[in-house]
Amino acid sequence: MSKYVFDLERSARGLRLNRFLNSLIRREMRELFLQDPNVAMKDLSAEERDMVTRLDWKAMQDYGASFFCLEKLARTKGVSNPQMVAAFRGETLEEFLKTRRVPGAR
Amino acid sequence: MARIIGGIGTSHVPTIAMAFDKGKQGDPDWKPLFKGYEAIAKWLAEKKPDVLFFCFNDHATSFFFDHYPTFALGVSEEYRIADEGLGHRPIPRLKGHAPMARHIAKSLVAEEFDISVFQDIALDHGLHSPLTMMWPTKPDWPGAVVPLVVNVVQHPLPTPRRCYKIGKAIGRAIRSYPEDLKVVMVGTGGLSHQMIGERAGFNDEKWDREFLDLIDRDPERLANMTVDDFARLGGNEGAEVIMWLIMRGALDDRAKKIHDSYYLPMTTAMAVALFE
Image 1 (tube, helix red, strand yellow):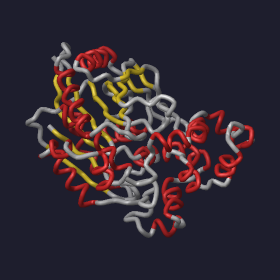
Image 2 (cartoon, chains in turn purple, blue):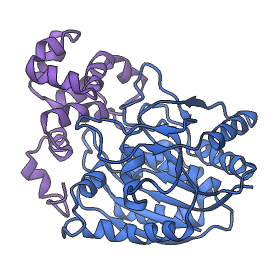
Image 3 (tube, chains in turn purple, yellow):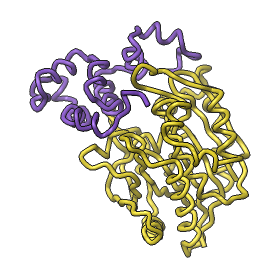
């Protein structure tokens, strides 16, 4: 199994970050986050706030974020899944799309 | 008595919903996807099932890790469409079939499948990204859904064997429902994809084709595999295809695949198959 598998250890480690990411399913949280991110992220640690602010997808994943919770942040910030996958692979979006059969299907 | 008239296996990739909502039917990049679902939509329009029993997963949208059920059955009359970060899709609320869902819940627990049940929980793309490819939304949905939310997100996941077994129990539950209703089983997820880690972007068309064959001819062999096997062969997130085994388990033993379609444009192999 991949060491990135979202198991109970990873879930426990990422719980606070995932709770914040999941809260972005609410329109008022998205608006607050876009207008005043530090207020929206008040329950997060300094390290967590930093990763979210920089949209460091790989760092958030390594820390314990669920991919499906990261999707909520990505949608809020207008980032696509191929962009996130490229970040996990350590590639630019353009590099990643070159490996795909239909790069326009996104 | 209620009858199970067929089954559908389908991917539930969120971009399927995006392509539908943006009207990409004529776009060359998306045309093969829409083409693959035409036979399914036509079959449903002809057969007119009353209920679609949907095996799918929530994507940490309405179910969060503070309390994460393995199998959760919707027993409500109606379900809201979830907001997953972009507002909810412009489609009508889903109609449930509460009396049948309650019957299934009682029947499953009597058979020692101790599922959880839920009422007013918004359903995410796991259910309705494939649904809009198959069922019209105007003037309203032509029938009801009974949703079964399966944990394929937070390990430990249920075993493939457990999925197959609960599928068989769901089949018995539906067939013992006294009203004369037509039901179609839908199993969602896959096919191969991995969204995380060093293998993000992984696909294997060869394994996907083999899966589409085995789910028809030899579901027992798939049920004998482990979640780790599915993750190794079809990618970490691709292991969610164990939900197809729930659908397959509920079908009549004589059911045969009569259509399938496969398209792998980006990160996830998009497939749909019809069983009758």
